[in-house]
Length: 408
Image 1: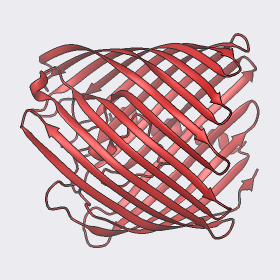
Image 2 (image 1 turned 120 degrees about the vertical axis):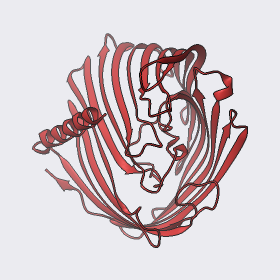
Image 3 (image 1 turned 180 degrees about the horizontal axis):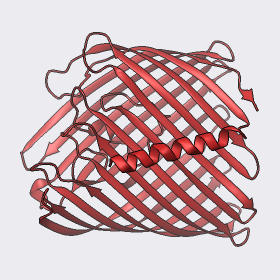
Image 4 (image 1 turned 90 degrees about the horizontal axis):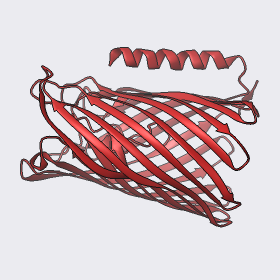
């Protein structure tokens, strides 16, 4: 895990350094947040509430040329709790993505991200976490737990005609913890697919994805190896000029093995599931609404078992004039462990969430944001015949100053 994290950090730093000389725009901003957290340690019993202060500068380098587009950002955040000792500190977030088009028919893309933070931190929507990690709030938490999540990806798109194209993608992700309550995991995948434009409103495609995920064994807790093959059909449909449907779904064939720290196999299993990503988006003059359902495989839950994650999200964005922007997000997430030890070891997590943000733009560079988040986490452990419920309320006021872009 240390070698993988070192490579990810080094690769990100080299990409950022290589592009500075040709950067076209630099954006700088600073957030100062004052708020409160009703359950600092995400505990189901005797929750501890505390106030907090955050200082979060952000630097972003962006280029939007026709043949080369890139965006690199780095955001360190210092978070200080007012009365709870031992958990204040920095969270780091780095993100980089590049798209290069050497010819009209060839496109290369590559990028990566690194997020190092305390598990108990409420992560912002622009944290750089991959979409396959919505269950970061379901991890086992402790007063000193930190996680480091890294991602690297590479893709190649070939256009054979204005209507036909094919693409291949590679992806690697690594999740590591500094405590022994959560278990490190590593995933890698390759995907091959083709899409075809059927008419001016419809696009269809077919893809095949092979995915592997490994989690190490720790002490008496078993490790796991999961291998998955997904077959997906996709459809992009412009129902009306302001209403879009984007859908991808298909069967998923899963094989799981669990083993001890001495590499002795405990059990193996084969399952058939499905993957899906379906969203409906409606646009108005000053607002946007979307409803999305996803189902995928994840290994970010801090346990040895790979998980199947289902999510439903309703998002509404409303702008009132030039000064006010409102955002509302209603979410439901269920994560079910894939265990080779039988149904008696099944664990299910459910997360119900409501998050809202109101932003008032005082001037071109200065804004005030009010944030409120309500979460309920349910942990059903069938082998222990018990269910744990955790409630979390987080709110705060953020003062954001954005400097004028610096052109190069």
